[in-house]
Length: 72
Image (cartoon, rainbow, N blue to C red; front, side, top):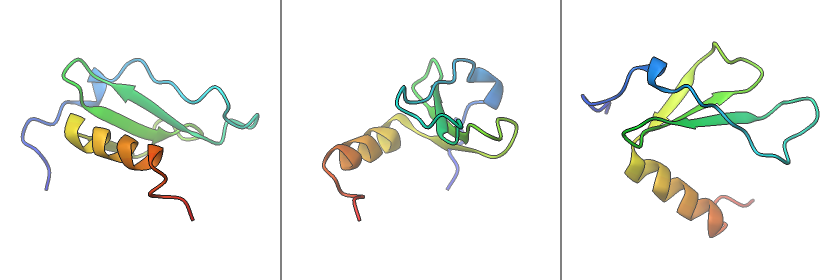
């Protein structure tokens, strides 16, 4: 369900990716707006689709990643 408070994509101006990303730049980029929403996009397609997460959703994802919940 999409939140009615979802920010416009133009609010995300400072995109960054991990410093250990591959040399071919095949990575994801992340940006956070002033309200705490996080946007994620494919670094090889910066005008393509963007996933957007509320602060609570992004925090839960990062917590799970740190705990290894997504490891195969």
